[in-house]
Length: 161
Image (cartoon, rainbow, N blue to C red; front, side, top):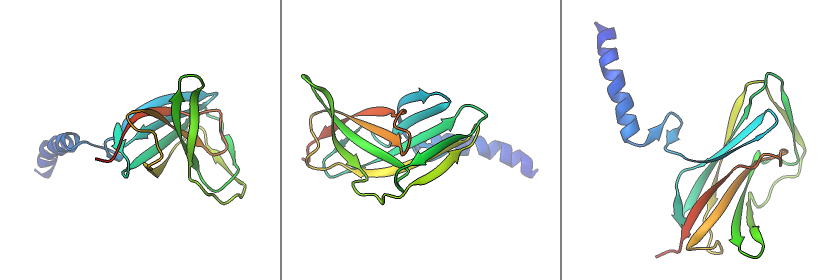
């Protein structure tokens, strides 16, 4: 009798979670690009498509080892990831204007992404007054120690009302 109720209730709970905008990992995420570098696959997601000055943006970097062999990662500091803010200038292309975290402890830290393993790292970044507004910016996420895989997402920044 209890199994019957479980089968009836579970789909409704799943539907309620989807309608509320939640995924299995929490609030809905807006996906960006996915970049492969050998067996390392990196993707980015944010919690919003646009933001205004004074708000924060949660950036998530997901890295996956698509092979059965371990991938060694030699990080130059204790920060697991870096988030960069880029603005487009017609004559020069994309220019990096900010990087987070702004300060890190410079201590080499090695770790291994095992075969078929997936890890995610998140960072909340403040939308600061010196970010360009009324235009698209590019947010990139980079796994510390692996500059070869840097996925990005485009985002509109609005001035504070």
